[in-house]
Length: 150
Ligand code: DQA
Image (cartoon, rainbow, N blue to C red; front, side):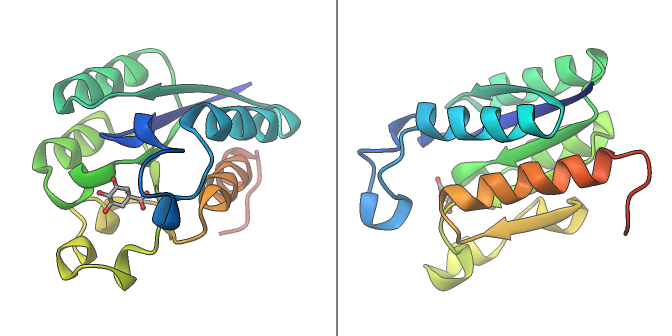
């Protein structure tokens, strides 16, 4: 079974209560459960991890590379727009990754338009709420299939 890590950055533990008009009413546990169900149906082993700490996210990525994780789905939260360290960890571990956002970061404040990760991601899915994550799980399964269309 292919191993996929679902990584959630800062403040995503507040989902459900946090600015629901932007991020929706699903809690992080709801999102994890939906992704888990989709991953299982597609034959992927999915683990998820959230932290508000940049260092903990880096450490989790380093561990994932050693654990044989094949692909990362990451919502980096605000670290998207600030973190060279997260970019370096993803490049340093050589873990292929998909960047996801619940909101459409291009339709919000100008500072959200820049991502330190997008240009080195397999792809970016932004603006579809919880569907952004489910599309990423689908894309991960397609990518990890023995023969995938590019
Ligand atoms: C977010 C968008 C980021 O700009 C913001 O800082 C977040 C959530 C999203 O999922 O839409 O924390 O990544």
